[in-house]
Length: 520
Image (cartoon, rainbow, N blue to C red; front, top):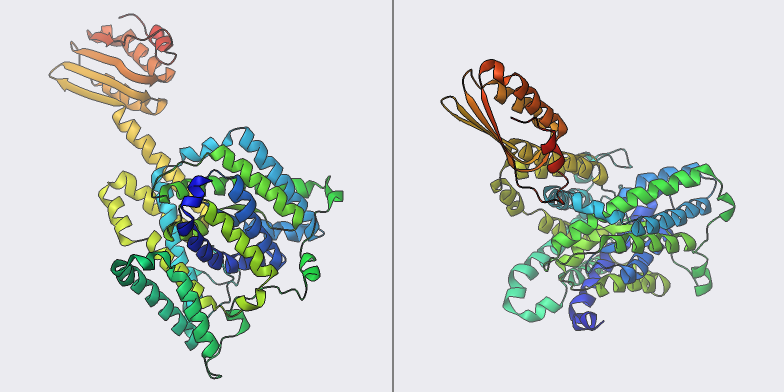
């Protein structure tokens, strides 16, 4: 708590900006999921307050996730009522808590760094591409839709073309002013005075954009669809009617359990990936306890499902905004949830003056920071074994969706890891008729064809030294290849020598296999 209070001045401005960005995203994801609009806000509130308090992450922000939109929309259509879907959300949360106790959080550590960096850059590019139509006043696609093929039957690029054909001049003006303000704030004002570091540029952007929209004359107006549009209750009594509870009578419904298991797995994977990304973005490189995170997300989903909300995960867009606003602790995530609650309970009518084009400008600028050209140059300089997985992850996420793209990126990254290990696991050199074949690190069955070919290259009357002293692991197939070679080496008058390592008694990888090698 002492650490949280010390960073209060950094976290509160960040919380305001995350709140402003999260508000339309929560509504947009609920709209795209075919759920009640208020369900997205409930998920945002729970993700901020409940998950924020329980999580061990300093910067991650949780709420309804775009990656679950398709699953949620399909599940709601299959079920007799929205309350039945809420039961699946509660069960999914219980499963996630179980995964946390089962220590499944370790899976996040096996994602290659190139895939995580690629995911962040892809999210940055997607933010730019997806928010450009909103910047121009074209809001046919809901906020928070990050899939290439959109719900309005357009795709990411055709949506931009359609937006150019239907530009709203006032929205575009607000968008350009908002972008210019942020650039001027970062490049000029902050460098001139430290005072501007404590005033969040996005807050100034929202106030400026709202003022322009409010004072515009009748010829240049924005429609309700181009402004933040909250469900408004006429009284506190009506406000509480927005909350609903699960239908417990459907506990034996097979569809509920299939949905719950699917939600638990996908939400857990997205959370682990986003936590890795959050830790990577953290300027202090702090490490989040992943098993605790799964438990926190599980409890968050239980609470969200019990009161009528969508499922929650750690969300990379809100987390990126949080990091860019220089948040230091999880107080910013908690306070953004509190602000969501207060805004919909007390001041929903004031928020309708915020133009979506101003919020689009904030997200576009965030996207640029995530996908700067310097990041691409940096990975290019690292070599193709890092650059190719990185760029394939970026392309795959842009043209599919977050989860599909990251799985492709992980697969490509693992291929290059295996390729690197494959190349360095076996070294063969020769001088005249003297051959040295050295096995290093992990020698798997994949190295078997190369080893066999190298051994068969040894000419008659030659000699070969097979050095296994530096190997950490040798596959039994490889041992079989060596033994087979030694059986027929004498027919070609080849002298074979094997250099073994001095293994400690507790070494369980090489010692048993060394015993399986035939005596020379």
